[in-house]
Image 1 (cartoon, rainbow over the protein chains, first blue to last red):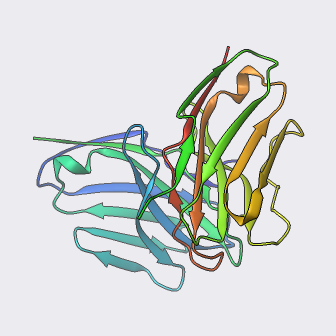
Image 2 (cartoon, rainbow over the protein chains, first blue to last red; image 1 turned 135 degrees about the horizontal axis):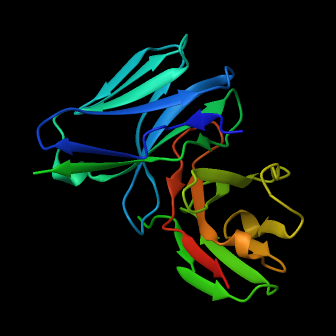
Image 3 (tube, chains in turn brown, yellow; image 1 turned 90 degrees about the vertical axis):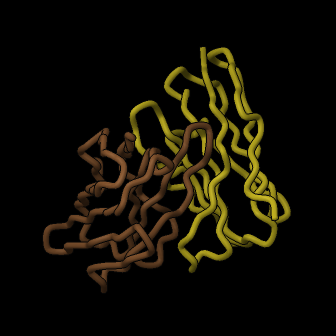
Length: 112
Length: 114
């Protein structure tokens, strides 16, 4: 039972354009959502997060949007840069639980 | 300062053998997590340690898997009688406290069971 889903395994975007990565979840108890970025042979690194009491969080070129009614969140990267090429994981947690539930990841390739 | 370190980086073992994977968390981090990523899958939670509390073992897939954390620092994940389906990248993460959400990940140990 995949509670966090990233239905697009890969995405290719031209440098300077917007990258939109999507994530859907099924567990309505999730109240905190995170995006992690992973380069090959490295562990995931935290990128940005959002609490369920908000619908948007912005940090520089990265913005995360949360639509609770649709159980959907998205990560926008504007403008996309070649160094953004990596695998992006969506993750979620519930209440006081510390463990994260991850999606399967989306591989982003930013082309010149 | 140093990040989370894991050893070995790669491990190839024969089916049926036992393996031990090591994690050194960031100094001062009280919470430590083990996840694994199988081919084509997301990260799957295995076990979580917080201070002196009993660990959350709810993600361990079978009784062949166990983990311990000595002295509130270094952790060892042990897989007994390895099976081919245990092949995955095993990732360790630590965080300052259970209440803080940012988990810092190590580079992982790639386990291949032949």
